[in-house]
Length: 229
Image 1 (spheres, rainbow, N blue to C red):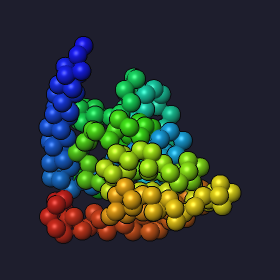
Image 2: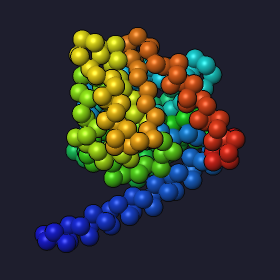
Image 3: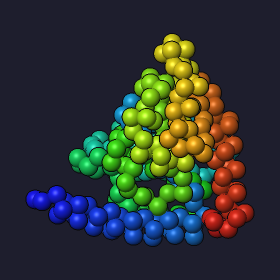
Image 4: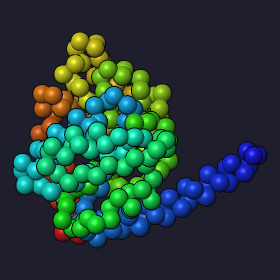
């Protein structure tokens, strides 16, 4: 197949995805749901971070739900379900990213206005997900201290497309000799206005600030009329 033909097909796929994502975004806004797309490499601690987020949101009376993307197995969905939040697994069977069509299909049967937040845990990959809009209001890129400070420079597209960067496993920063200042500088070199949270799902460090941000963002969007109350 010629290079021109490959590019043409890719544009067609992305156009269809963008159209479906626009429809999802409208559905989320009309239902008053704050949708968040979590992207990271495998092993970043994304599921542990999300599990604690779901549990603590429920503890303060918020109503989160989650969709979880993986190539195979429902291990992460079962793990997240312990939080008490509604969770559904999406198996991509070889695809390295989630697509808007998958999100729409797995929302069937859910009343979106029953939830305040929809977290979409994307497949562990720092390349493919950057091109696929899932209708989210906020895209979150996670970086663990075990991965090194230069991850944003190696994968600029995913971090440039993110609104928020979450540094995970911050309790291991000292033993990993992780340079926090350098990591934050690298993140801001790629995305100058990115918001950064340093967290530990194990100790709870950074979670009060993170949860306060989530609740405030939901309320801010409602007040601005971006998300219907």
